[in-house]
Amino acid sequence: MEASNVPALRPQGAVTAPATGPKSGEYLTFRLGAEEYGIDILKVQEIRSYEAPTRIANAPDFIKGVVNLRGVIVPIVDLRLKLGCPTAEYNSFTVVIVLNVKDRVVGAVVDSVSDVLELSRDAIKPAPELNTSSVDTSFITGIGSVADRMLILMDIEGLMSSAEMGLMDAAVAA
Image (cartoon, rainbow, N blue to C red):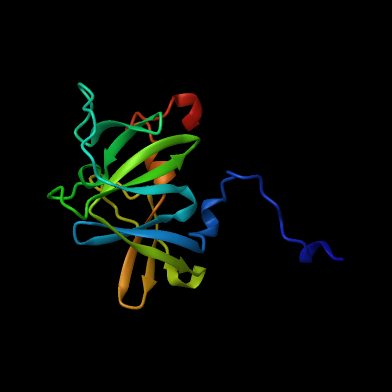
């Protein structure tokens, strides 16, 4: 058997080089305002209806507080506020996506969850490069196209473990 026929094995959690571009796979799609986003389904632990968390004093606006999820204290981040959506109304469609990010459980509040889509590499285009310091596109891995829908694909692990979020210890985030 030739070595070129053997798939390369990567340890779980290994990071691919940015030159490879966005990867194909299954994405959970959700809405924030008028936009539709997608995150790697493998990062999703569960989807729950929104319940008001216990507020943490002096936390940034986008950290709504914490909830007790079967004995685990889970910080709740409102992605609408974090990503600058103009409004963040809580209604019957508002849900919390419970994520497992770098061995830490974190909740992300979104307007609604749409579905799970499988995207091939051909359906994913690179994220646009914007030459402005006011727009942080570092957590956008690509733009997915499905029929007439455009999905903004996010590196949810990178976003949630960023130093600005303050949710991970520096040693864990490194």
